[in-house]
Image (cartoon, rainbow, N blue to C red; front, side, top):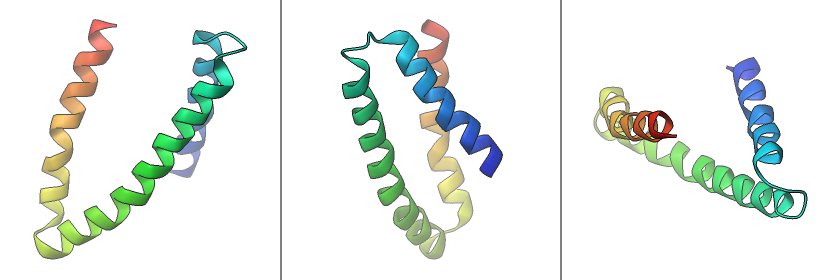
Length: 77
């Protein structure tokens, strides 16, 4: 997971610099980092509580709609 996350994280910034110009890229990078940080801070406690209260399967099945939305967005791009 560590190697994969490192590749994914660095590729996000490379793609960000390719998509946006030099003036807009730092602002968008800041937005991306902010969203990632908020998501990491919220996701860990929420998934921990859900897996304690219900089951790990609930967490797994809750991710499926987000996966489908992501696939739809990527295929339309």
